[in-house]
Amino acid sequence: MHIVGRTKLPKSAEVAKLYLQCNDKAAIDYSAETPEVVFALQGFISTNSYFNSLYETFYTKYTTLDRLFYLLNLEGDFQVSVYREISTRVSEANCRQLLSREKFLNCKIGKATEIELPELQQIQTERGRIYFELECLSQSGKLRESFLATPQLPEREVSLAVVACTFQKETFIKRTIKTILQDKLLQSKSIEILIVDNAGTLNHSEFSDRRTKLISQRNIGGSGGFTRGIVEALSSNRNSHILLLDDDIELESEAIYRVITLNEYAKHDLVIAGSMLDLSQKHQLYEAGALYNKALHNRDFQAFNIVRLHHHLDLQNVSNLNLLVETEPIDSAGFYFLSVPRTIFESVGLLLPLFLKVDDTEFCLRVQERFGNDVIVAFPGIAVWHEPFFAKSSIWNYYYYRNDSIVQAMHGTLRYADAIAHFTKAIVSSLLVFDYKNAQMLIQAFEDYLQGAKILQHADPEQWHSQIVKLDRSCQTQHIQYHNLPSHRQTEQDSTATFMEKIVSLLTLNGHFLPNVFTQDKDVLLWQTAEHADRRSRAFRKKRILIFKEGGQCLYRNELDKSRGIKLLVRWIAIAMKSRIEWSKVTREWQQARRELTSLQFWRRYLNLEKSSLEKSEHQDLVV
Figure 1 (cartoon, rainbow, N blue to C red):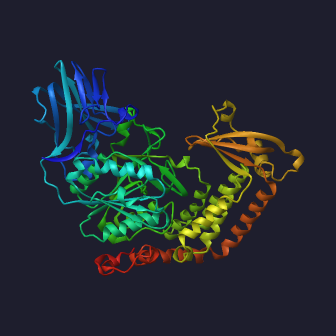
Figure 2 (cartoon, helix red, strand yellow):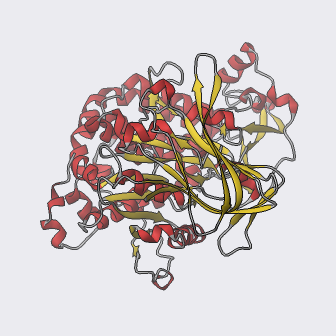
Figure 3 (cartoon, rainbow, N blue to C red):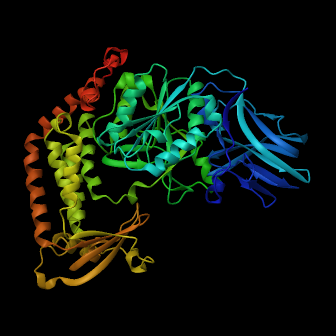
């Protein structure tokens, strides 16, 4: 038997329902050497959960697996029932089928109880989500371990290089590495862990395990850190796959084990995307892959739009899990957890040197162009917890939305009218809430995009980033107040602005074009979530705006500066008009630069790597 996966137990009560459903006569004993479930008579558990369901469609479509067993390490008498649930989209009803039910008496720890699953369904309308339920029939009982196994031999050997890029996230990255190294089942697999430290704050002595290697370098951003690790991994012929991990995640080590076994039985090369769970609300799915440049409902082209699939799906509600049983094509997946075969890098090239943001999307778009929609897959049950992007507080992050324009230009989807409309809306929206930093960042981003590929080919990324951070700190009318949060949301903020309020707010830029005598020396609180922002017209004629972003831990304090706001608006109008003349030329330059910027030769110069035998290896021809 070959172990394909495990029934994992929750690490805390906060996430328990993502792993198991149980009654009050079953509990997890964490005091044992290995955590186990203990039962009283009629104790009951079910793996009808996000992490421990078997999502049948994904195994039948992408792997050669068709014979599977549950192997349960039990003590006592039990009844085991296996179910399949199918979601029918027409009626939105869930169909629950009993696949098998059997009693097992006098079970002993150390002797596996085998439950054979029926052959996985090949017919799409009959495939679903499989799980088992366990009821204790004796006065007491235990479940020590549970595995999903197969008698089938793997199709290929998999050796995984885990590349984790970090910058001053010492606590997170150490915990992630510890989670991987302490997983006993992972010790049976070929794994190498490469930690790329862009800050130089980690100590080599803390990573003494033979499976780990710490690489320190100057700060050249996430794309530079990940690519440094990728280059290192490709220099070794033993690594068949590379897994990219962010430094600020909470990792479930089973996700890595499943990535390895899925690749062992894969029908063809797969880019396996982990889903992102919300670190602030751990039961919520933030995204299971994303669509890029598409509208939410009809999937038509919509420039600069990102659709996060299954966004904010409550995974504690088991009926929601049936929404995940069907595969969906995705355009983009994050580097917070992305497994890529080395053959993909050898075919499409390395990452773009974008420092931060959109480098993962651009790489996925290149993979799609070469291999089609079926190669990038977001497998349910493979996920990490990550802080939601909306909660990020650094204003300089907005500068790197420059990269959206670069990526769209390179892939032939950026039109002048779309770009101007997108930036104008973002800049005016910022000025309406006196967010001059954000407006300035967006204008600077557009100006730098117009410089063409030389800003990536020749500029020093570390110095460039330090200038952007300095620009962020230059505005004296904006401040961030940490841990000074409103106690509750005011009900009046839910109301919708009238048409006339919107017109007056827009025409006066919320008071920028009015004489000072009309400005009230008052504050107004605006509450924002990822899906909703309070009406900006509430700030009309106010002196100060307080903005609270739900999910964050800070309050933004913006003060009206009429002169600065008007100058930024005039500056943007002038740039927008001038850019029309050079638009086609700049677009062609970005398209022509893609091949060079993703090549190994460019990256070895960019990373200041010394010449080595790697230059003579087969990987020196990595190009798009």
